[in-house]
Length: 238
Image (tube, rainbow, N blue to C red; front, side, top):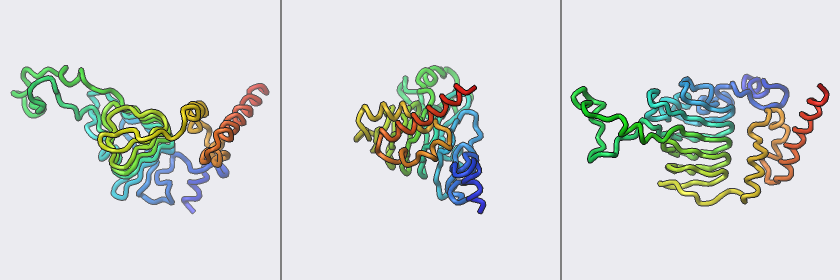
């Protein structure tokens, strides 16, 4: 009964509440990720979930690596992303200086080894924020390197290592990660990005799941237009 309450707490037939911690029948192996994030340097959108049989709730400590506040880089994950067990984000704190003969981080161990260390050898080469947009699916043990942007609709294969930006609706596999195909033609991708169903209100998403899950772009555009017409009518009535 508790799972049914959480499923419909947003209103009749509107789907699960984004504030539900364990949205999969209350099982601890799956969490809506935003509800277990405590760091201000990590942002996660609604309905993005992480599945892990060992410790799903420990994501930010186990799966976001080398993330140090003083470096200022952020991890941003959008809405409706699906992260399989072992999905890992390597942040900028993993970087070592590569401007000299050795990459060994002498400076982190003792005062004597900090002398003559130039922080610019690291800070000048930081990659910046790591960004995952919306509706991205990560396979088991996928790894994302610092400063990468993964655009909406992408699929990251199991054990892939993503070290460069991924365009919308691309499928990436392997180490190093490479694009093996794009899920739709360019025109369809542009239309999908314009529709951006992941930003719709929850009740509209629920009402038009058939169009979202289907492969009829005209039907999905009609669903988007229908919602806009309702909004326009409401606006004119004010």
